[in-house]
Image 1 (cartoon, helix red, strand yellow):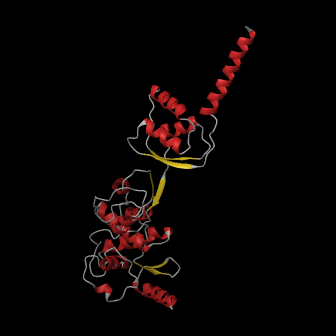
Image 2 (image 1 turned 180 degrees about the vertical axis):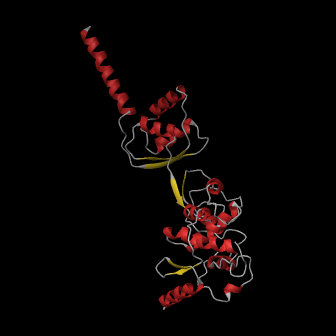
Image 3 (image 1 turned 90 degrees about the vertical axis):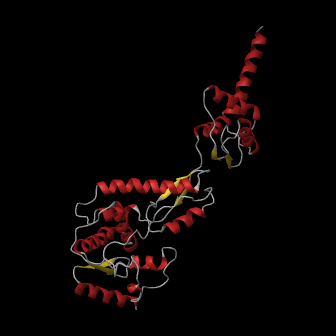
Length: 316
């Protein structure tokens, strides 16, 4: 009788060890990235895990699957990374919790719609094609995360949605001294600021120059608008503007046409949009590059001409 009890206890201990080894002790294998497509059946998921050596036993995998089903839990599709040290239970928990791989794509500030479409179209981890057509300036550039299976259409729709949210917020909080009439004009002003100001600290000052000019009806004389008129936002200028360029006939030529151009000339980032909505209060009407990434500002034409001479001297 005692021997029989000892045998039962021994068998119980062995079964417990076996259970723990299959479900909780890591199954060492090489790191793996696997994809579980949408609509994959339970048996197919288990086959994928087993064939990739993520789990060691189909039987125990089925046991885990049925346990989750009893508990009302489901396994989620997507792309998963396994370190090679997961136990069966931790591998299934990851899929149950949907802890999929996140990818990241950075859309730089100041690009045109054409340039952004090129970046998204060339991203191999996004699927499908871009069908929607957005107006220039309606996409918010930043770093976006996305998961396996997301379409290019969904990605760019998020960019537009984020843009609309931010513009609505900034329009409500804009400066009362702002000389623009609509949210679109805010984006247009910000797009010029984006192209002119490379240093963050200068954005508010650059925005103030254009705001001051709009207030008195002075032409903006913004070089980036002329560049946009020539390139249509599809290529780099590849050269400096000439005096002849500044005389071209185009609604985007802010040397010959007063006010803002008809549309934004790029997709400005949040920093430029903030600056455009709340420009600094300055007496400046002019600025020119200082050849060091920043600008020299002036309140009158005479001082501006002096700054231009310094700039041209620095080019030699």
